[in-house]
Structure formats: structure tokens, C-alpha cells
Image (cartoon, rainbow, N blue to C red; front, top):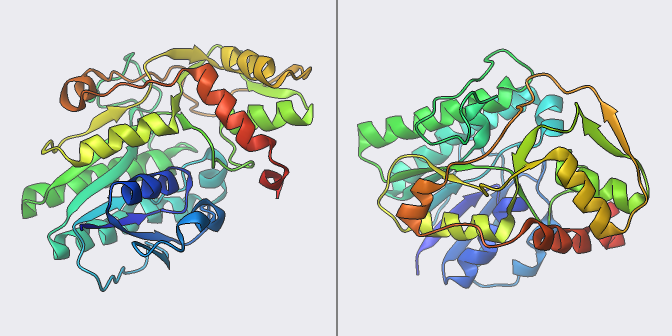
Length: 313
């Protein structure tokens, strides 16, 4: 049985990855400091003999007594609400945290997977965005604490690979949604759903014609799990290439929730990307992967999760 450390393992994506790894017969060490993660996300795993929870801040030195075969570094303050509120912490997690995680992988001779983001492409001038695109990022803008720390982490990952011959992987995650997102996450899917369910107006920034590509969590986890088993050592995009406007998303949420909420428009935030769509041809070839869940089906499952009154606590 191989042992995997998942940093950020009590978070939205991390907890789903822990579920999948347990299902695939790995021993899982879940590390989280619960700044944005929730114990509720992993409570069902706590009684499993092959699951261990460690409360720890990855910006501090990491000590794990067990021999590790894989380190999956998913810890991050990934929501605009979080990284605008905690910009220095965001940079530390994306630099010091990555340095600690990749260093731990090196000392164990373990494979290392870094969860990067489509934000490394910034406000792209190329659409859809292939892995070869270097991006259009404002290095001193309000989003730079997140964007540039992820870009730094990619550089650090590649440096460890080249200098130490490590087995490393970088997955660039595009907008992902699904159950276990936080009510106060601040990203557009949970915001629209909670506003619609509460009968409040849906807040649309700009004219709502900016696009995103929404990938359901189960599809993302499948892609990441396949990537773990490859020898490929450069970045791979994972996301849904079906490009949708924010207005389309709002209308679909209103339809699925049967809400009579209206839409209100507010100014577009600084450096908010106008278009976001992955070129997944590499993932198609390398992993034989593409998303299977339609936006309607994925949103329906996510809405049911948010209907639970406990999600508001």
C-alpha cells in the first residue's frame, strides 16, 4: 500500500481527492490548518484505518514520520475573497508552503504533484489557453498575491525536477465547482446558488459577458488521478472547454433553483479576466481524459448540497 500526503486535504478539492485515494487503496495523510478547509469535509474518513488527519500549517516545516510515496500539494487560499483578505498568507502558502512540500517529497524520494491554476494565464490574450501560453499577469495587481505565488510554485517545482531529478507534475486547474464548496467562498457558483436559494439578487460583475469554463469536481479528480500515474513532467490543463458567460450561468442557476431573484450589476473587479477557457488537447492525448458532467447536471448536484440548512452554519 502506497502512502500519500495531501496538503489542503480538508478543502474542497483536497477532500474529494482524499476520498478517491482511499477508494483506490492508498494510505492517506490529510494535512490542513482549517483556514479555508473544514473538518466536516473529511469527517466520514476519520474512522478509516488508512486515513490520518494532521492539523498543520504548510508554511511551517513539515514533519511526517511515515515514509511517503506521493506528495500532493493542494493547500492554497484559492478564493478571491480569501486571497484579498489574506494576501501575505496567500503568498506564503504559495511559496514557503510549496518549498516545504516539495522538499519533503525530495527527502522521501516521493513523487510530487503541485495543484496550480488557470490564474497563471492572467487576463489571457490567447483563447483557449494552451499550456505553452506564458500568460498576461499583472505582477503588482490585487490578484498578484495568488497568481504570482502559483507561478513561483511552478518555477520551484520545475527547479527541483531539473536539479534533483525528481518526479514532479503540475496540474493547472480551471474553474471547478461542486459539493463541499463553502457558502462564503466568494466564487461565482456558490455565490449565485446561495443568492438564488435565499431569494436575493444575483450579483453580476461587469456586463456578465466575461466567460468561464466550469468543470465538475468528479471530472477534475478523475483527471488528476490519471495524471498521477503518468511519467509526464510538465504542466497539464484540466478543465471543461465549454465556455460560458457569467450571464448564462446566472440564468441556469435561476432555472434550476426555480428562484425569482433578479440580477444586479456591479463594476468589474480589478484584473478580472475577460475570458477563461482551457485547451485540453494535451490531457486528451496524455490521459485519455475529458469532462463528462454537463453544467446542468453538475449544478443540480451542487444546488442540492447547498439546500442543506447546515451549509449555512
